[in-house]
Image: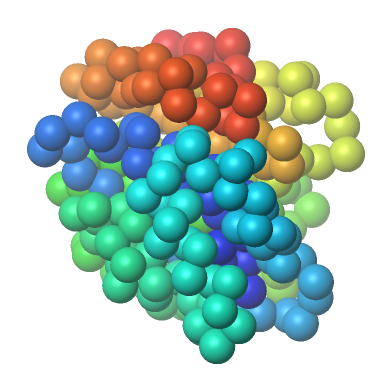
Length: 237
């Protein structure tokens, strides 16, 4: 995640999904931002939706109104606003930048899991998504990915996990099915399903004790986010 992305249309969908997933009482959320430095690109500037109130506000009026502060150019684009503006009520956050080097990354991951210990659901928000073969753990550019071992560590501590995933230049359905199968193999006993948006996907691996609550959230998504967030039928358990 980069601060420059904060508040764009993909963020609106992302926070909407998380708010729906943790809508059940006493179901807690932890967020590991996996922060990397802003790069000066135009990515993350897709905020025109904030001016199209009729089209976008009804999905989550409270969330939309809060993000609409970004129409003021003096407002800083920062994930710190998620906590300051209470966009994800009750959530805990780990916001240390992610290093590329392997030893530093291990320490970063351990600190994150310590801070987020006990959260029912932990969200990982890497720049690109889950690891790829071409970028090994500890290599240059590895900070843009979350690694299978990190997801497994969080799951094995008792949390359900959800991860942001950027689409690659391959057929999307098959791409998501392959990732879902791998996630199911790494996180033994988890029920795995995915959610699609226009530009990205999210993979959710739920603990057995959380499955019924998280499955109920699909009904909330279907009734509120309709054409913006779609459960993709690849449920594995």
